[in-house]
Image (cartoon, rainbow, N blue to C red; front, side):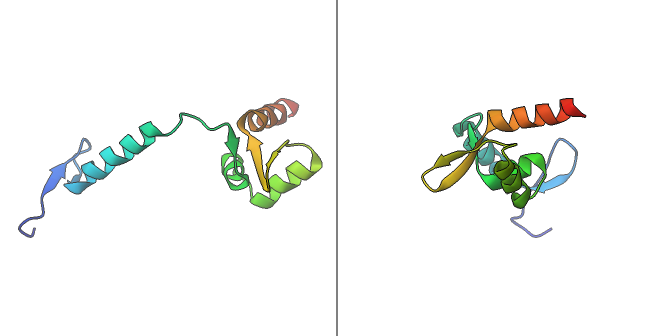
Length: 93
């Protein structure tokens, strides 16, 4: 190990660079500043939540199965509509 390169032990006894803990604290601080939940999701975010492609989300919106909101020229999906869509899909099976 080179001089000046401090290492620390984390809870799982894995050696980490000393600066890793600082990065994790900064990330936690940033997360605490964000709202706890979003009301509207972008198309890619909705696709990530459902684990489907962007094209599939557009198809669901065009068919009327997944409602969306138009904000100017941007299309958004309410989290509540996404939750309802998943609930309906699960109960139909």
